[in-house]
Length: 282
Ligand code: AFP
Image (cartoon, rainbow, N blue to C red; front, side, top):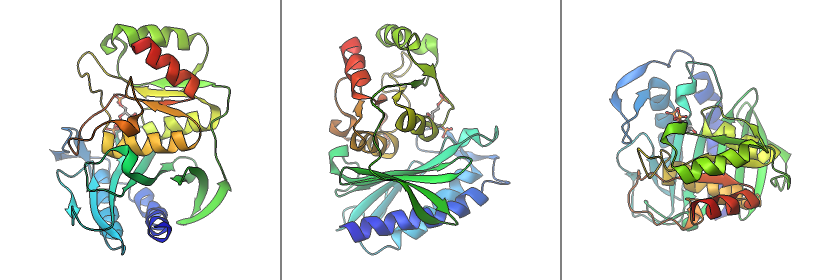
């Protein structure tokens, strides 16, 4: 198992410099929308093509799915791992030159699959430094990427016990009342860190402790973020780092997967805050 998982992470790391270099000149929107009805940037398409080609070439990877594609490619029910990728998370940050990320979830079951079928997950953060965080068998490791090579910079990463930051997506008038009441309490205690790319905001929570959420909205009770490509992989990382995740009443990893692009209300962070959130929404 671990050789294939390692090969997947090595491939994602080796591809990251081309994704980053490919951002220049690719910030215009294409006509086509992605399966979630969101406009696609040329940069989204470029990253998606690179990851599909490279990941499907790995012995032991059966299929590839991405936020940018309607359906799974490769052998959807084949033996081997089923990889779910958000090639460029936060791509609307490209125009404003803010951080973005790549998210990868490695499932042992055909997609769509519940998060409990993840064997590993991770993300690349295109920040001042390109770094990568992986969660494998309950251990979280942070790497600096140097020309696509992983250099471990933190082993056994764990959320600090004391939460410091929070970041909540969506618009205040669109938040359900019970979530807004929860936020009003958090606001009195923590510092706001919200940048519009989940990976960058979640990395703040991993580094400083706190909570990130893109909650259920009045306009969309399932929220905005996708279970397969964002919710499950990030919940797996945060829970492996000693934190918690929730769709409002259960761990994201327990949410039943019925559609490849299903959305889910996403809350991740220190367990004390996730417990408080579930009591507030209960
Ligand atoms: P884009 O990839 O379209 O920029 O969306 C990013 C994202 O999926 C996630 O990374 C952010 O947390 C969230 O959406 C930001 O959404 P808002 O623009 O509604 O704040």
